Length: 164
Length: 375
Image (cartoon, rainbow over all chains, first blue to last red; front, side, top):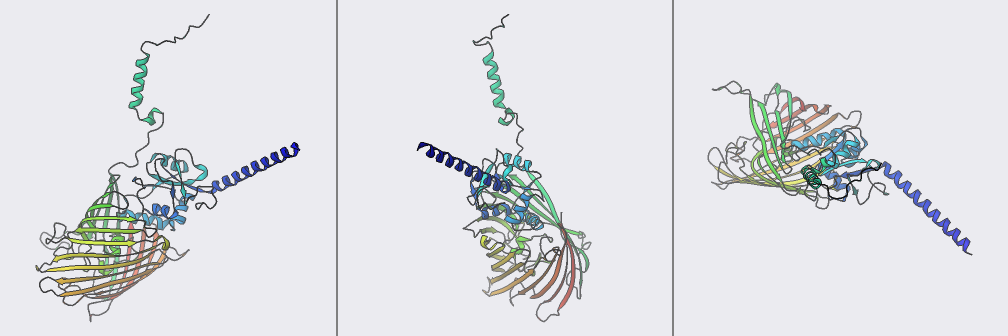
């Protein structure tokens, strides 16, 4: 009587392990294509809505709720992360995005436009060093020293994560 | 041979070495002590950024009404500088060709240099920013969206109601401004409140060197940019002042203005209306003058995305007997044109305008070309 029970328990455990591994692999696969929003570790914010994020990248929001000035870091043109900011978040073409920021500075609405990061490593490095900094990087590239912010309550890899 | 035993007791001078090392370590930045490169500061203060705008124009009209053939537009330099994380400076200087160059004694220079904007701003948060200086009066969308950057605006010319050197609305304002914005559940409410000198005795100019009377001008501007209708901006403004004219007469002035803008390229729609109430303080006579314009433009799709045709209709109706606007005629004008963005930072615009200035006046026509750029 004991042997079949033990067999069932072992089988159930194996199945559960398999499911967990499969689930984890799926999450990893999703996270691999996702773009993470990362900030300097001292930024106290945990979650942003997509609308908040759009406001940040359009320069309409210049300060974190802690009072620190936001420093925008954007990848150079052609990078997927930049395309996501320009097309998906700001709903503009590259030309419109540049014109928007020239106008923003010219209107004295913002002292400066976004800083450029020419590589993923540079983006990660600068965000880890510049107080108040924010940028987008591939979720698979996120390292220690930066903080990943939830978007609409979701992290990269979560089903329904909006930035991919 | 046994190796000599390491001493286990206190070593003379060891505690001194530890103390010195500790002090040295404490004196170094933590990053350096950990053998990591020191993080660079985010911004060096003051951080000065200089850029500018320029334009070259050509016009052909059936009757003289402004420059003919080639003319230089404004050469505009602007400077933005962060003085600290919460204090910024902005300056804008223009050079404008004079039609009376070389005349008079001493002879007039070829270009007028003008401080168009100069402001220092203290920023507490997104909700509260306080600044002092000279501004483009924020009671008109065009005045604060495009300033002196001809490259920024779709058309060649500004609407008549807010043209530089014009009288209908006060283009410049010297004083203080409180401004801010709040998400307001996705409505994105922005506000500006200001007090300043208002118009000078020459009403097309601001009171740069001081007010012309004891009365301060005031303004309030509110607009929204709702998340739900991305691209839409709508708002309104109030402005009040007592203006002393060159004749010495004083006029109470109130301006009510509103705008709605669909701020996308396909299409771009801008509509503004402004009404100016003047009350002669001597006779009590009240007049209302009105102005509006509607502009529509459309950025074509690929492969014609560099082209943007546009049209604008505008009207100025000046009340008879308005002392302040005695030299300002009515205007009805239609503009049709196309903008070609040759590069990301330079555009060529060509437009046809037809207008009447003053009731009963002949209709005039003109063709205009402008090359506008930023650098």
